[in-house]
Image (cartoon, rainbow, N blue to C red; front, side, top):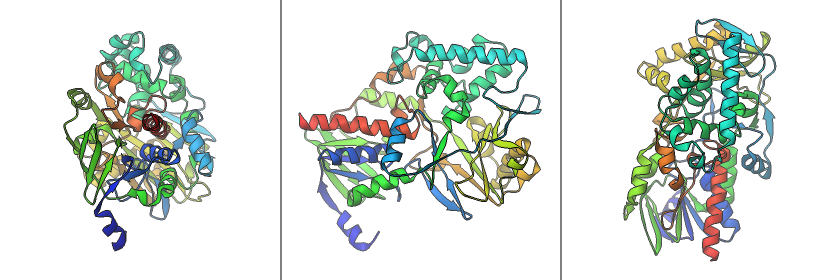
Length: 461
């Protein structure tokens, strides 16, 4: 940022809407508002746009440090990618997948259901079918209206699974798809209703089980190009390095004060994770309902591990790179090789309590433990990457976890209906608040479109 730009930012400006946060939700909303003739200013705390989308080059290899995949049902994201002229490519999935069971035995397999004993497989299929029936009764935008919402929100997902079966391996594997793989919290820490919402947001529980569906395509050059190109269209209306310190609001509109610029506007869009709302001093304070509600939302925690090798050696073994086990430190891993890259990249995930435990170790010991876990899937060669990197969103000041926020027990039924409700001129939009596309970029874009349409309607009326 040059001196002239800095000087121009040390000022008060007037806009119709101030957007707090330059992630996919905020930038989508800002672009929609601009197209409708509504003036905007976007204030972003970081020195970059994208939020939880971040592409960087480390050790000569492009790594997607945050979100990266595009699923066939994610219409809002697919439309945006196409409209921006970006190209996608399919995730590598040729060959066999790997599963490690409770005794540490490795089995290669194809298909969606893990290679477990026939009786355990039957229980898993029955549970998936049962969950699909329950999910079909849910509108992901109104999960609190599910016919059994109250009861389902009073029991943890782990306890609900134990009520259905005493087959521990079946319960562990079904829990994995929601807990470790999505909400990144232990299954005892969230309700069965929250689990159903996670599945409903993807269309069905079956979709979550199908890695070829949920992790279908990637964007050539990285998914962060979506917010980068959206921000490019806004030009000088995006202000980086400007965390909002206070937000004054009332019948007059809002005044957002950041470190270098003050924005007077008719409305505000908070397009940041709800765990960050408390970083802003609201004048007057937000209503009691919001104070209580936001305390019942918390981020999950996952380490995204990138291991780059001189070649994708696992393909030589006839492996797709897809690996699962609720009994491994890295509970899942995939071939994450970039489009047209001769190097091979594996991406693994370490979530909730495993991630807590590993961050009590030194960086060297943590790396050894994680690579040891990957070697259980792929063999000794996995221990020797040419590039190794851990995405730790828990240390990001302006994120504080990953992938998204979810309610504690009872919170979704108690507060869900109020989660996206505007407070006077303040509107809320981020993937954490979405129904369809919840905690994904698709949900962020949907929320951006929704909030922009609401504001445009109010302005015109």
